Picture (cartoon, rainbow, N blue to C red):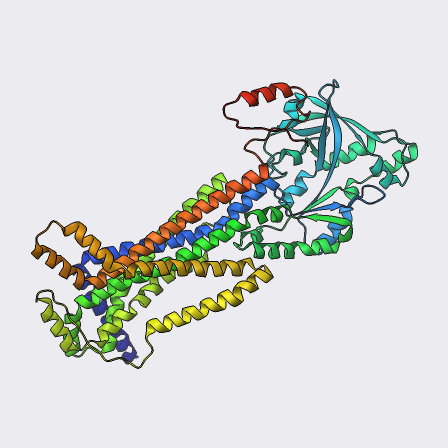
Length: 635
């Protein structure tokens, strides 16, 4: 055990020495250390937050869709047959679904009725919906915060209240024909079956809280409780015979529902995947068994949220493309910055490393010394970038929960943490490979000679080497990239078009876009000499000849460092331009989609076809300086 503890103690002491030497060297160049830490911290923070933001983007889109379409995953409607309207036996269907473990469902009964005030004024044809508040709350349909509707009472929509001049406390009369329902219940065609009932307005609804769509044409005008409506149908249908009335007295409304609403059990993570194809597969997989469990051939299945998400699929693709391209560019940018810093560190410590090599330090020790320098820079940058990303993500989630209602955890997703680890820990070690090779390949004598040359004036060294028989790395890289590009364009691209694989098309487009960014960056980096000449003549054209020669000599001797700075600048500008183009494309796409859906900047609708004020509206629109043109559209 003593030998093990001795080995552990010596290892810890050696690690302490390495970090101490790295710290002393960093304190001699504090600006370089601060620049490296700040740069890497910003890169880790930005990419962590962007990748995390892309993870809750599907949640934001889903919340917007639920606000527009209602918080309902599946709607089952009975099909119309030659015998008329069919109904859904929800009692039997719910028993089948409960046996499957699918208990989040609810029944509704909707119909069209003539709604009037008790004094017979303000008659309107409106849609009446009966639902079970408690059952829909358990199923998670909508975010309804109102209590159950009392018996002989109802809720009405604000549009109906405004159109009919109704308010809380008023009474309304509902008249509707229920001959088809009585026929299905009794098996006999009634001579007359008219529902006549009076209800008191308990509340006027302005916000349906995702229980119904936001489109006024799909919203109900009158809302009542399902059980209370069952009692009304049993006793207040006029024109029935005694036998029909006896059969209707045992009527159960859930055996004759017009709609069944099914909800994926909470937390409904199926919608939170960034790929719309995967979302569709997960949602259909979760809802297929409830459909197959009943006679689906007699039902119409609607997936309102999933169908509306198809319109936002391009937005999700753009976001994923944005994150992927930004990740690639930041990886390259981080590698170039860190490679420059570590290369400068190895160059300035060559004499120190040479002395250590003379007194017995092996090549492994040189590698460990550079790694200590890498960790001294990478660890604080990774930690601070991750903490800043977590703070920004927490603030964004709190803001979205308060304003949109996005359902998401406060901790960073695992993918964002992985991105932070790659940028903050893996990339620094990869960037240090070439400087480490340079450090261990340099003999002590060369290090001493370099130190002596450091005190001499700036000089240029010309090396003449024999041609190597090995394949040049640049040529090998060009060959590999060309082969990959040909395979992608002549095999993967046609395959994606034939199979309609949007994900594969996105990957191909991302590869081409990254190749264009890198190609243009390398092209302009290769023109560094031209830009150096331009900079030289702009800054020194008025100087004396000796100053011009000195500046030109410095340009030539520091060309390697200037090329790296030029490459970093090109990559940064390319990324900024790319983000700007993507943002503008997103805005244009949303604007065009909105204009296509509405057809105009402003739509006016009237329940009575503008019978009250058609001429007035037309004159006001024609005289308005803000209206370029208008037209009438039939319903």
